[in-house]
Length: 155
Image (cartoon, rainbow, N blue to C red; front, side, top):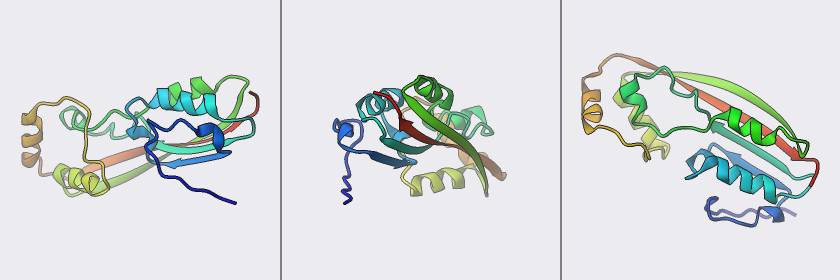
């Protein structure tokens, strides 16, 4: 029997009640990604499985610095691996880079907004936002995605 629940993961505290946790491209929106991951890993029971994917800190590394400041910081998968590198977990990680070309930088940001990625927690200069209108050239953007399979093997 399967039960599905939709909750705000930053405030959810019952991870121990689930033996399978799946999160596709959402946990990076947490206010504190590593704190959330620690909470999940410390809560789950032995033999539980966690499948997650997220854009990692290498995403968008080909954007200009002024544009990069307009986007949230993404989790560093190396820090995630450090949390898992103990005798409690078996894990595998795979990275895939998806590269897309956009007509211009504004078109890229409009596309991000359409998928719900329209909130930034970074402080930026409003002039950087306005200056994007002058950037007319095509832009190639890399989405560097980390995929983790995690199984708890010891309590």
